Image 1 (cartoon, rainbow, N blue to C red):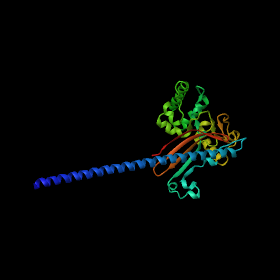
Image 2 (image 1 turned 135 degrees about the vertical axis):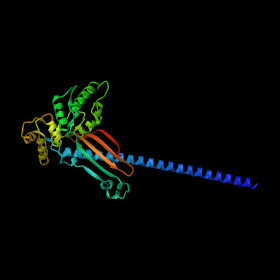
Image 3 (image 1 turned 45 degrees about the vertical axis):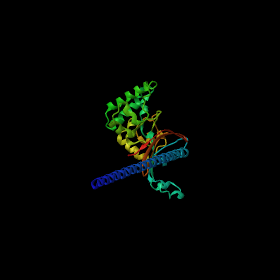
Image 4 (image 1 turned 60 degrees about the horizontal axis):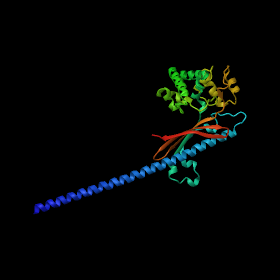
Length: 308
């Protein structure tokens, strides 16, 4: 009897321990699930807030570009790197941009905003390679100089031009024409070539001239036939003090016969706006392309994504 009683008590104790363990596991699982749900909701809420803030930053950039157009001489508009739009916004707390009554907000103290407006006409437009369904000879020569300056194989340029022609010919039946520079690998460029080429080129919906006031030394050299790299560097240093207000002014500064009419300008219509937002639980980057026609600034496309 005693042995049976002890066995029963042992079984009951074991059953109780198993029950307690099971309840503890269920409670821990429920607590973890609740915590996970709260974390997901918090992250999604911060992500939504970040997108709204980046949209506000884009509107701010559009305002800067609009005011720049209004303050420019309508008879001879110019865009250069000494203007307010060209000054990068270094990373700063969101509270810096808020009114004094809002600076006590704990979240605004943990959110950092940075951004940059870039002139896309400081780059060479891939779209200029096409004239209808044919390759434009003058643009092709400029891109040959660009590939040479960047030490890229000319076979890659030929692959790109063939891909552009094929995509243009199939445009109506199969829209294969890339919309962004990052999609040029679809026309045959290797990722390595694209990584080197990307800072110097753009892809815009219409043919565009290169802005002589904002183009890099390499782009000046490649896009202006007859310039050497040393000429381009000298002209870049010169314009830092006195941006050109006309094509004639550039031609005089070049000191040699150069043809820039129809292929170059001293003002721009297309800009890229990049905004970065760093929050406690997420970081976002948004890139937008805007088109400015006088004081009208419209967004052509936007893309955003989380930063690792």
